[in-house]
Length: 346
Image 1 (cartoon, rainbow, N blue to C red):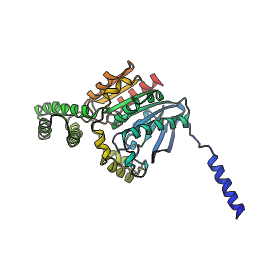
Image 2: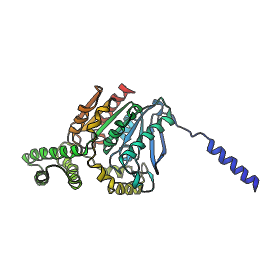
Image 3: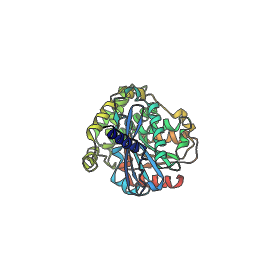
């Protein structure tokens, strides 16, 4: 018995001392977890790790998932050259842990992102070129990261895709964009009843928005792009249907994490959050990509970032066919602009 225990002990010691195998190649798919502050956050690294160029996808939400960004088009047009880091934030996607309600806040999530950058460099080499890419709420989280301490020095640059960095300004711009579009579309006699409902609401809610008004504006904004001819459809149900079994999505985890996060007090803490006043701290290369018909995060948010950051190394591009999900609605533009940006700054 003592001999058996001794053998087991040796096996455990040997296992614990084995160095984790890190995959380097041109077609890698590695899943691991970032453990921090009572959360175990799923990380999927796909693509060309030999490139030593890593793009951390900071997804929207709170409570959504990086699964929705891992499309075949991006795999074919970016992952062959670089590595995409699909990170599920705490209480999102396939991430694990208890409810973490005490740790579900922007400062903690900013620290999570910092830890992820450190983890990527620790796994794949300190000479790795890391970029962060924030979409929607991910723009707010990326803005928090880029304006905290010297965190921006850890990355080579940042990309904002239909992102928000200032929720009060966001609401004001959403209302304005909805009213402008409503007046135009009513004149064109297109979806008149829907646009009149939107216009009526905007006319009776003029500013200093409550969280309920903010959420209603966002709901109208989500519908609005579907009322405009020429905007490429974004069908999230079709994306789920196409990938649920092919890519083995943990749908139950995705759903319950979303319901918890989207219904948490964290949302109330966010709706008055802004980073416009601190964007002057950012001196890193910046790429801003926005949809012409994004009412959720109007393109003027991108212009606010562009005008406030403290760098001349910046570019803003507007997609003429997309709304709030440019990465899927204008895939060609997205991949082309991201590739050009990375080639300039890696």
